[in-house]
Length: 277
Image (cartoon, rainbow, N blue to C red; front, side, top):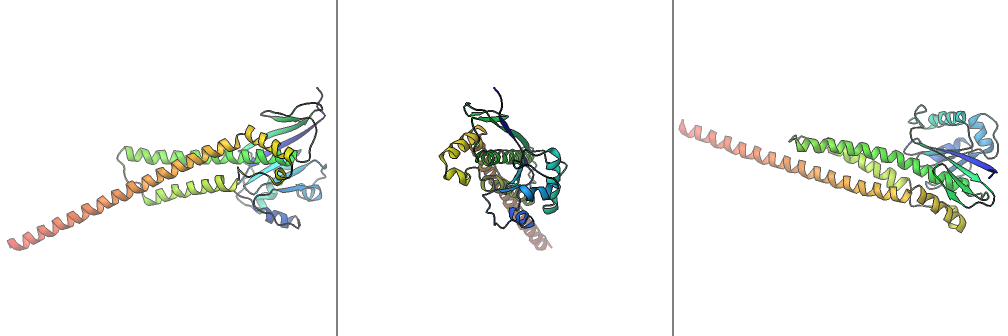
């Protein structure tokens, strides 16, 4: 079967957050972006950033939750764009931006059925909403991958703290607990609030076909299942941190009580010494 057309997508999770309005202002785009809609760059605007002529199907989609999707762009285009973003957002590492990434393709074949695989989605004909919906799903997927790894690092930290307690080393300080709790809160904000796993693109509300396609894509990439697992793990981590706080407070309370008892004993001894003089 002959492939009539193919669109290539490359998604990267490069940051926790990207200010789309800052980019729009620099590109002289007269629009204010809300946190749930992507910034789509193409044509003369994208050409001015990449410093070369582009074909109409070459685009870049930037998402507020820190993902970027390149559509039919070259590796050099990606690097040039990352350098451009770094000039706006300094925490972007142009050397390791591909750490959390995914490649995907849209293949169009006449008389075929819609088929989803790990590497491509096959459709019988092109629809305008396909590039945006595919980009949105893989952008969320790589953002989840990044957050899943960060969560693993938090779990490793908690395991170290638990090992200390098991070995009787009860000197887990408030600063260490607060630092870990802050990481959990940041993880919860980045994942559960900002990536907007449960939110659907606007186009899905006006097109049944778009809604069905997006739902199939989201299910195939297990976005909702991964979201639920992360949420459950986050709740467990919060419970563990609460337990640590209770234990350390109890230890400090017990320590204070022993100090008071010791002071009372010292006071009694001093009184007895005075009486014996």
